[in-house]
Length: 64
Ligand code: SF4
Image (cartoon, rainbow, N blue to C red; front, side, top):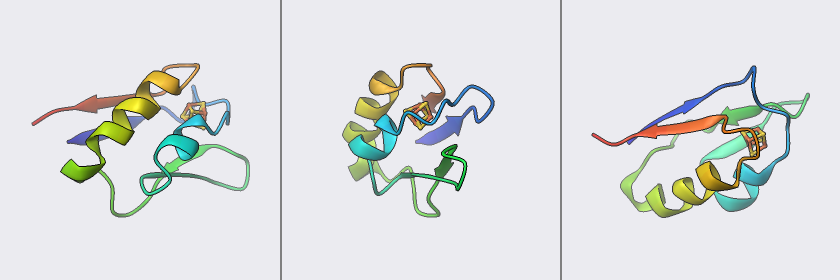
């Protein structure tokens, strides 16, 4: 699973971090960042929740 984040679109709502704290974090300005280990198959359901929860559609995923 490949995760794309659009940092220009992100408004720092933190929904992604709430849903998948092992995958997403935020920088000092609140903008989303991916943690080094992300996109593991076991995280897929949480990542999908984050995609849906993001209010500005800043997260997209590509399945292999
Ligand atoms: S939920 Fe969306 S807007 Fe909020 S921090 Fe995550 S990517 Fe950014």
